Image (cartoon, rainbow, N blue to C red; front, side):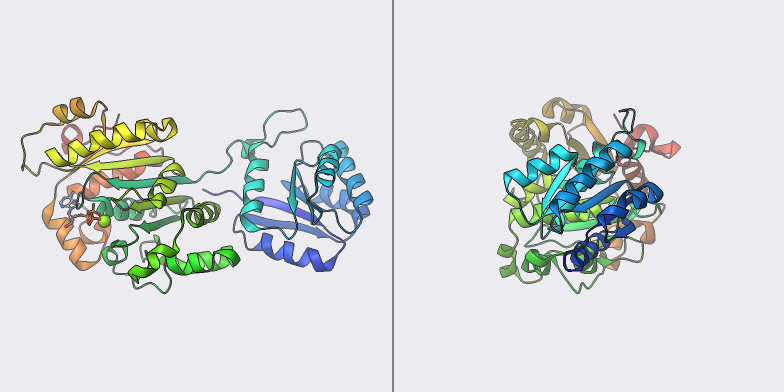
Length: 399
Ligand SMILES: Nc1ncnc2c1ncn2[C@@H]1O[C@H](COP(=O)(O)OP(=O)(O)OP(=O)(O)O)[C@@H](O)[C@H]1O
Ligand SMILES: [Mg+2]
């Protein structure tokens, strides 16, 4: 669950305080605890409000602002200070940091820089005695999962959508599915959603993107899952650049506890960006030759990037489809890596759910594929998987 950061700001100038205040208010995880227009009163405000972070705007009076930063550092040790100034020269930054500020942002402040600074401050927060503050230990508590397939039709969208819906059942989770199969994705179809906005709208507005616009761009399904679909027009795919995606992901992480990416099978720059920014990459395959051969190739390629290699979890889909002779053991030997999860085959439930545009939890909540995907969602969110007794041996090989 995303935790709230309580912030107090001081800026004597209305002209700069207003936009900063509005920017902070657009961040869902921010609670604006106090706002002050006088440097000399702020120390008392901060002592009373006990915020998690203070923002000191320097430009109204640099001398007074730096003095205030020193005073806060001495009188409220451990309280992180974020200094803001339009003068982003080395000298100004150095002065603010020497006075005791932990971060410096150049005004006008840009949302993703603010979020990154806030995350860094939260991660590094220490108490007066130098020990880490409990809610500051993790820079964020979001979970980012990429789902990528070892060939077309292997089940990525089915898994991404249903894992997303299952995770969204926990009221503590706020889950968004981003369809990064930019040309041919169908996550919206799988959930029978007619979106008002897509990733193309987000990309076109990237320079003035704020949290409110971004949240409005996602389409919410009745089960609680929010979806950001791929562009409707194929020619709009080129609008989405990898640096756009990086920015969108950072913003979404501040608003959602879990992000799931349904990737294309073309290894585009956006696919790679998404995988690099993920905590876990689910590599979906089936027990047949083409799919397994590609898994071996993909594991080899990803292996060249150590951080990426560690995130890979092999998921075998459609187990029990009986269309081949490759055993799970043989597959593991070939891949050289254990299978993280096995998802049973259930043609009727999956086809019915896709045709109805309903997730399995609505269409076939008791089918074996859904039960397995509930377990997988729990395993991903760090909870113990609840494997149904009958299937424990056959389908749940969580290692
Ligand atoms: N566990 C399963 N049991 C039975 N059928 C399944 C299972 N998983 C997926 N399918 C079926 O396989 C087909 C392809 O699934 P899906 O669209 O999820 O794959 P994909 O990897 O996203 O495909 P694409 O390459 O087109 O993006 C669908 O008809 C789906 O219903
Ligand atoms: Mg797909």
